[in-house]
Amino acid sequence: MSCEGHQDSKGYAGSEIHPGEVRTKAIAGCHDRSWSGTQHFPCTRLPGRPTLDLSKSSGWDSGLLVLLLLTLGPVQKLSASAPTDCAQWCPPKSSCVNATACRCSPGFTSSSGDVFTNRLESCDDINECGPPPRVSCGKFAHCLNTEGSYHCTCGPGYELASGAKTFRSESENTCQDVDKCQRKPRLCKGRSICINTQGNYTCRCPPGLELNLSDPNVCSDVNECTSGQNPCHNTTHCLNNIGSYECRCRPGWKPIPGSPNGPNNTVCEGPELRCHILETHTQNS
Image (cartoon, rainbow, N blue to C red):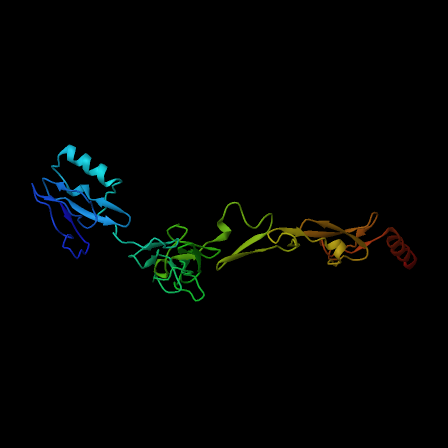
């Protein structure tokens, strides 16, 4: 039997029981009775209770092993990677370094740094996005902090060439402008015309229409007849159409021959004017 890793002024730490040998004194606090073994048996002492590493034993007599377990009480199997001395007070988002120190998990830190010994410390999230920023996402992108981490995303109107949604650094930035006018359904509705710009778009209206104040993606008709935005002659009346208007002769009136009788510049004559012209012509003849 072997007790390892403990200093003992009487020489029991690190001592071994060889086949057929009996020891009657305590070995590093592992037991206080006589033991007889057939093979070396490492023993490690933990605070408050003895612990045997059974993974290193073989060939023990089954009856002796039962007696050993009953004598020692609860037995804990040790892991080769677990520290034998560890701080029990490490706060959330941290892990034990040794009996007096803890280390914050990646993405977290304490006021004393990643490793600390003060029991009043806590591990808080590192804001990689700042201010000041610890990472650069590059052009047309912004940084988004998350608990224990962060990621970069392209700004509105841009997307990664790969189609992915996030990336980690400026070297991975392939944010490029998206032609918003090619999206389905259309952003600019009705008769409005979509104009793509860098990272954005605008909707424009054809003549006779104007952008709706409540929805800048929609064009509404301009009523030229009620707004006064028409050049109709006073011998005509205005007729509004979607996106345009017409000047029409009043009932009983007709366009004057030879005048520029277009849809927006018609000049008309009434029955009284035609009679006056006819009467004057008769008198002169």
